[in-house]
Image (cartoon, rainbow, N blue to C red; front, top):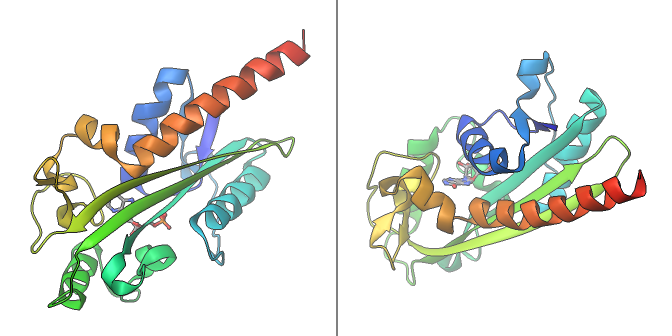
Length: 202
Ligand code: IMP
């Protein structure tokens, strides 16, 4: 089964492929199908945005589409950047710049508790929608640490492991991350859905 990923983020693609390949699901990018789909993320929740992205790509490709909408919610910032995580600080910033901005905005604030959230939506050509969600708690590090991963990984500290996400291997991160949890929940939902569908066509 082939899913089109409603994202161009290579970090997400790597993680999605790593987890969904176990289910025999091949994940491809819209660009690999010659498609370019721009979706305005106008939702007020991760779940709404994931559904907007998956719907648009399913419509454009005629294939099942999967989208993850995720972000970092910092308690001392009232849950910001939240759904604006990818756009934090405006379009001029890259991942490292967004991490620096967040560290600056956290200066002198406490607590430093935060969490990542991930909402997954999968839309099939017949309009069926499957969803799942995951969450990972941590703290905002005092300085970037580690070189692996992407986005805010260098400043997302996991107290239990005394490491940031960027200091974990891909496997270690997948085991605890918001996306890993959401994808495992999605795996269960998808397995049940596929079994139901197979039964109906018998
Ligand atoms: P989205 O592509 O609209 O879901 O944006 C998600 C934002 O959250 C981007 O800025 C990502 O870099 C960031 N983000 C999501 N998941 C992770 C993660 O696992 N590690 C680091 N940053 C992440």
